[in-house]
Length: 279
Image 1 (tube, rainbow, N blue to C red):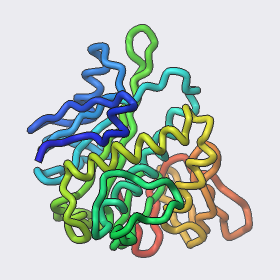
Image 2: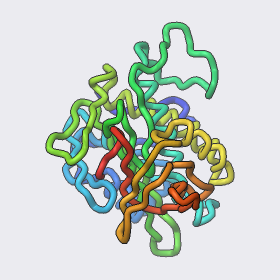
Image 3: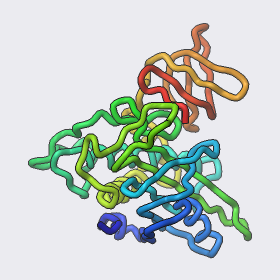
């Protein structure tokens, strides 16, 4: 099947470049930005050969899995709010995956809190966000998000939001448990992209160039794994343990330490129970 965007995404001016094979959808989107493209433009490929995750780790994306990136315009967004697009992406991706896991799939998203249409059952898999940029299904890594930004000649900022989802299969030999969407859903990668483009438009409207991040933060926490549970965060200089209390208005992880103090974490490897991952 061919990749496609939802009617809502197209009505908001989102466009799509679809490929059979690419090195990296993030790299292609950034190349287009260097060539003058401003977006919003989705880049999707059936096979990605040089995908990457956080800290430069390789991201395996065989044919049948979803590799897609969005070149997102950020004119008018305060520089310190650009990174919060990663949380917009997380909320959108979890909602799209939950849509895909419903027994009767529909690419047309319902408003938050609205009754489900006739025949649309609750999602069949437990899907949650894991700070900062992973999605878990039944406690196993299902997807990752990679936000990359560059300042282009002339001072224009280019921001690319990359999505990698194990749709058809989960890669073997990883240092953490991984899941594939096919275990919970009959949706394929093109269908998932349609759900995702719909949900992203919805979430970015709430975000409102960063002015609505408090609402995105609330939605993110509602979808997060491990809130209120013991957590361990391995950072470059130390390992911090405590209770995962919340994320703050900058998207930083807030941990309640055993001595009663609160610590904020900007980056690190988060581990808690069965939801621990290492990438």
